[in-house]
Image (tube, rainbow, N blue to C red; front, side, top):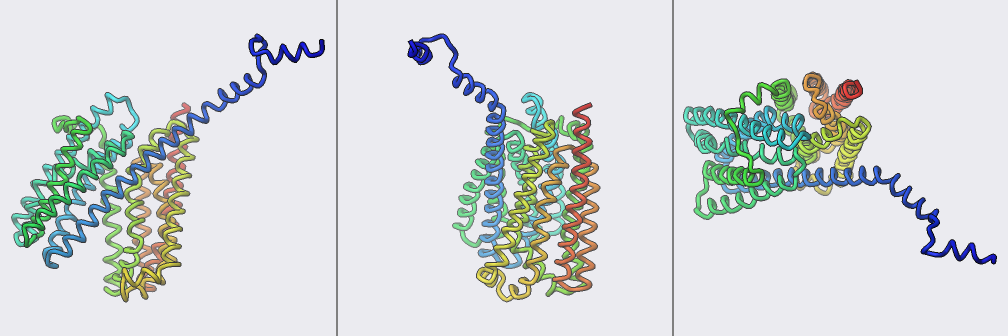
Length: 450
């Protein structure tokens, strides 16, 4: 008799509910939102990882091209090639600020039909910028003549395709397909390798012929971008698209100009105040941190679309910005620590005799890089919240502080003084971007709840 209840409870055919099974199902249902969130976070990390790979491919390809050209042409030819690359970068940054960066902020997380329409119009205005730039560069090249003029003449007809290639890869990253952007850059790298090898095989390579090989490969990658996306540029609607989004585009272009001009002005001022030797020392220090610097400059391309996807969830948005700030600060600290600890092993090989002068600059440059990483995270948050006016104001303040502190430091203590000035300006920049980000975040959150 006493065993009957036990046998009934153990009977698999019994209709009595299993308490442990109910508890397990309840736990599963309760944890489902967290599991979905973690899966989404994993997807975000994968997208960021592919974005990093894409940026690494692009940077490595450009670096390899520069090394090859430097080794096979004369110094004058390499100087002309550098002029061509500089013009390309100016056109690229301008077109990106006016089109691709706006798309990333405003259209990376909208309905697919609206996204495709915006993509085509964005590409259309990008094409207009490329064609206008090509005409200007061609006229300047014809007027300039000589080796540099030949490079600009060779570059001009290739500029529209090069600008479109960058726009295609930016759009792919923005819509959550960075693996396809990486495939596009890989296609450019392989095509460029073949084209440059063909030029070298013909013998007596010139700067203009190498520019053509590089540019044709980039244009081939732009065609591949069309194949990947099935998106044709719509120049007819490009201007109207710009007008509808000029509240962001105009400020982004101005911000890009402030960033580029302020960054170079510091070096010119240092050279004028402390001399060329001090300028060379500071340049040497920047050369050692350049890979990380490039990564921080490129990071918003990948980070901003991910932040846009969660900006209507304030806590997730805030958490992601904090995580990015922590990661970037850690990268800056780790890179700097490696340079300080192991610098004597690699520094002389990279900088030669200049290493002895550069080494004392590493501690302040470490502070500058850590603060640069944190500022980049806050800046990405400001961008994702569409706070273009506030972002431009913060950029101007930070740039002015960097120029003033760097100049004062150079006047007081040559290269080391300039490095200390830039480090202190980095601390100020963290405060400026941090306060701006927090104000923009609260303002955006209030619009969600209202």
